[in-house]
Structures are given as C-alpha cells and as structure tokens.
Image (tube, rainbow, N blue to C red):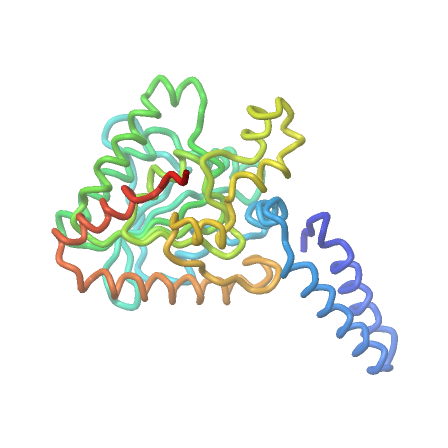
Length: 311
C-alpha cells in the first residue's frame, strides 16, 4: 500500500510484524509489536494536521466515485453528454437504485493511472461536464427522483478551451438552478472539494464531508501562492483555510461528518462505502418528508446564513 510521509513509522512497523510472522513462532514478540503499532496509529491518526488530512484526501488508493457507486448502488445506468458540445469523462452521472429507491447519482471521477487520469482529466471537469450535470438534475426533477452528488475534485479545469466554452458561466448557472430544484439533493465530499469545481454540483439540502476529506474555496497550494507567493507554504494555508470536516461543521458550512476507517478510506474501502451509504440513506429519508416548496426555502436559507460577520 502506498504510504504518506507521516505514515512511514507505521508502515515500517507493519512490514516488520509481517516479516516476523513468517520467520518466528514467538507470538509474544508479535503481540508486543502489535500493541505498539496500535498506539502509534492512534497517536498519528487522532492528531492529524489539516495538511495531513489533505494528503489523505488525495491518497492514490482512496475510493473514487465509481468505486462507491459499485459498493452502494445497484442498476447504475450511466448517461452521457450535455447536448451542446460533448461528454465530459471527468464528471460521471446516471440513474441508479439505493436499496430499491430510484436516484440520480453523479460525481467527479479521477483515474488510477496516467492513461486513465488523462481520460478523466484528473477529476477536473469542463463546462460540458457541469452542463451535463444540470441537464440530468432537471431530468430528475421532472420525474421526482432524488439527487446524490459525490464531490472529489481539486477544482474545475482552468484551461483555455474550458474558458472559451464558458466554464464560469456553466458553474454559476448550476449554482442558481440547483438552489431551485424541487427534489431532495444530498451532497457528499468524498475526497477533494476544491473551489467552484466542487460547488458546481455542491448545492444541496444536506452537505456531508467524509472524515479525512476537505472542502475549500481554493487548494492550499493555490492559497499559498497568492498570499505568500510560495506554494511551499501550503501547510500554513491548509491551517488558515479551515478546510477540515470538524472545522466546517463548527462553522455551519456542512451538516454531517461521515466517519472513515482509522488511517483513511483507502485502508478499508468496504467500511467507508458502508458508512457513506448509511449517511446518504439517513439524509434522503429525512428530506423525503419535507414538501417541495419548503425544501427549496430551507435550502435557500441554509446557504444565505453562511458567512456571518463577527465584530
């Protein structure tokens, strides 16, 4: 398993224990090392800095949208195209069932290797991706189907072609239209939740963030480059941005934190999927009890109350 810099002592101890299991029958030695390992894990993972959580959110083995769709939903049928330009493979969407209930599920999709990352554009959607998302959300509204969005992007693609095709306008239109869609919308940030790229599918009645995911107006590196003219100060920026799930919950930006296995979702994807599914079902069941007109009003009020000034 690929490890992060602050995990090296843990990974080295895990390797040592595995080696000892093959060369010795002394269970007492192994047991002592296992106790030491658990203590080291607790000391590390219970005291993660914001920058360390950003690194876990970017872990290459972390489950992506398609992984969670396979674990949580059945009968997934992917839909394509914005009917204006093309199909954006960085943002996937389709109809599915969540324990028999019909839903529209969509999310950013990264790649596992260089070839797939190029195809998926590293999870950075183009304007046609956001237009596809809006087209399908309006379709879901027409048929009264709840919407689930899984956010995992460092940000919308800032390339020349994307700007020429109206990237900012596409995201802004989604913000406006999502605020007025008359079906329940549950948003879950499963990895990176970067800037307008996240917000383009992030306006919901309930916004959840996984324990080691982050949700921010800008990436730590981008913030550091602007404020300190030095992207190497990303660790300081991560602290200042208040981008971790507990900080976001305290500020009233999100509604729920979805727990992960110790060390991150990649350590046990099945448990991560189980926890995410439980959160999605809970919030959808609650939202289904609210009339459509009240749902829209509550969604409007939810976002209007953010960013209160303190003298």
